[in-house]
Amino acid sequence: MNKPQTGTLTGPSPLPRRIGLKYCGGCAPRYDRVQQVKIIERDLRTMITLLPPDAENLEAILVVAGCPTCCVELANTQHLPILRIRSEADVRLFIEETTSEPSRDLANSALSVGG
Picture 1 (tube, rainbow, N blue to C red):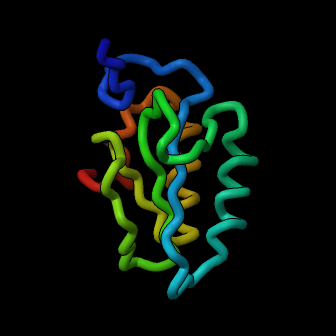
Picture 2 (cartoon, rainbow, N blue to C red):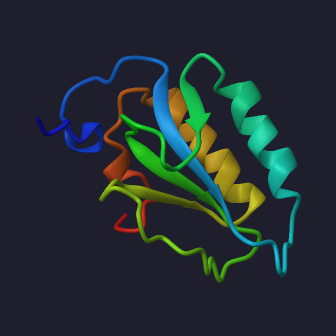
């Protein structure tokens, strides 16, 4: 039996939303990535759950890169929407998008690789 890809469903998602978290290798960080993820977890604690990128039933993958290059390997992402955080400004945007429209289709995020 095939499991559904929740990242492609339409309509409101149940909260908290399940999002995979993947860090870059940290070769040239321009900000404290771990601290910014803690801010995301604190500010969105009732809205999202950050999980390993290979967890089941994810809606998207949140890639946290330390610089604008964002050279993170994205193979094996289960064909889910990829959201890129490359700066503290991106963290603020992710929090703002999530709080202003909690059931937003993550593929339409301004941080989406396709967005």
